[in-house]
Length: 100
Image (cartoon, rainbow, N blue to C red):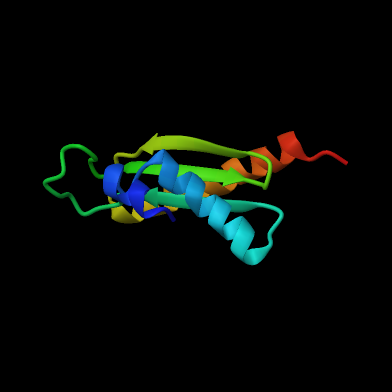
């Protein structure tokens, strides 16, 4: 994770999600990786990034795709929805990019 990204954009942003995937790929010598970063709840005073603001990312060493979610549930449902959507993003990525 690049410290500059955290300082300028914060932990909940597309760049952070991409860097998390890249880091996991490298650290674990993996073929694919998935990452999530977001504000699950409870509510806070942060108007810039409200509860339910989430970035998910999936990819391999050649390409990383991202998606922003804007969830409106309670903390537990936000976590569950994020997990399901992140795994689905990874599934779709593998299907669309699996070249044999």
